[in-house]
Every structure is written in C-alpha cells, then in structure tokens.
Image 1 (cartoon, helix red, strand yellow):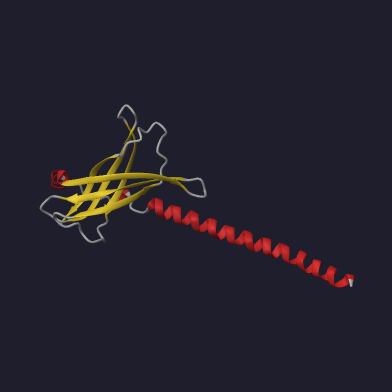
Image 2 (cartoon, rainbow, N blue to C red; image 1 turned 90 degrees about the vertical axis):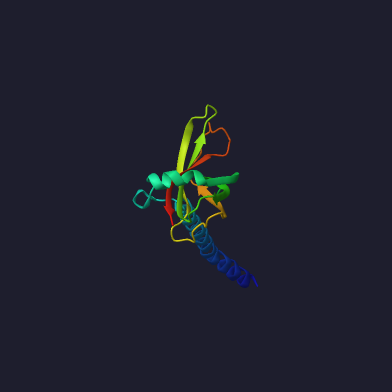
Length: 166
C-alpha cells in the first residue's frame, strides 16, 4: 500500500516545476502587456516634431477664440510603480471656423509661478471629426512624465500651440 502514495507524491513533485513555469510565464506576459500599454498611453496624443500643427499668424489670431473649461486632474501609479497624471477638461470653439486639429501645451508651475514642466499634447487629431463652430468636446490626456515635487498642486495652464483651421 505504500507504493501508490509514493507514486502520487512523485507525480505531484513533477507537476510542481511545470505549474511554476506556467505561472511565471503568465506573469511575464501580463508584465509585457502592461509595459506595452503604458508606452502606448504615454505616446498617445503627443505630436512629434515632424507632425506639429501649423501655428502661423492666422492660427495665432484664432487661438483666443478657443476656450478650456472644467479642469480636473488625478494621479495614479501602475503595477510597475510608474506615476501618471490625468488631465481632463472641455475645449470649446467660439470662433467662426471649424477646428480640424488642435495641439496644446500644458504648463505646470511651482509656488513662485515659474514653469517647471511643459508638455505638448494633441487634443484634436486631424484624422478625427473636426470641432465645429460653437461646439465643445471633452478631453482627457495622460501625462507620462513625473511632475516635479515643487509643483504648486494647481491645474496647469493651457495654451494653444498648433491649429488646423477649416
């Protein structure tokens, strides 16, 4: 009667490394997916230097017609201990032309009102539906950069950095 118990213990011991390897594999796949997701999230909405939207005199004179309201912020940390800041609000087009694309700069300040972080983001992609005259659209962007500790804890200032006018 001792043999079936020994055989059963051997089978359990031989399954242990396989189960452990499978568990490690699943954890590695999840970690790789999370890293990929954070990289996609960090690059989403950012324009590169090559695809900056125009900001000539016509766009600069139109920029004051664009308003930002209802700013909200939150911060989160993922499983890899990376900190993300989410900035949300509403963009409104109060001018006479549709907006086919909008790049903005978020500026974070310190207690002395000096800019300590600038981050350019694309709020309206030229491939998306334009923002019509008199309409508003909610936005939420993710800042992958760590906001310096001397940040004044206020909502960042937002200024238009590029426009496509239709």
